Image 1 (cartoon, chains in turn orange, green):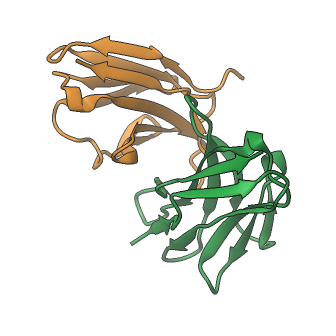
Image 2 (cartoon, rainbow over the protein chains, first blue to last red):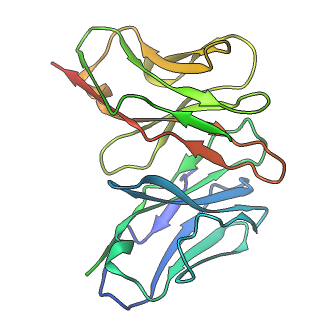
Length: 114
Length: 115
């Protein structure tokens, strides 16, 4: 298995532009998580899907952030408009839904907003 | 509230010495506990987990963790540290309150193994 796939790996954009991050979970996993990691705030859960349905989006910073999971093999995280404080590494992770399963993380997307 | 705490921001240990990275938890109900490691510029990697059963759990790369219910702790251990073990380590608990199965991560502990 190729593991969790994220694209792009690096993204540099200007303030105000739209940014779309993509994730392909491990085949068969039915839970998907988006995280953000910064030095200041550490690892933050943004949103969590189960069976393609958003279960908990309480970590989404504000309305500029949105996430979708149109099918079991694809998810996007969109920031519109982007701001310099959105600069971070964004991770996608997937898991089986049962409570005893671990998560598998993708390599992350390093976003820089200038 | 469900939570985990990693009281040490950084742990330094000499190569060949035993290492311990501490984690304490607060959950209602049975805890589902996990350890992850993050190497520079990489995603988190699963090391081991405690679900039920033996209090000593063995995982990848020679790591193990001891579940202690009375002390609500789940410390990560390794008998002999390697320089290559230097990384950021996260403890996590699965939040099993009704309607949410999200993971709650600690703030991370940076392990530095000195040659």
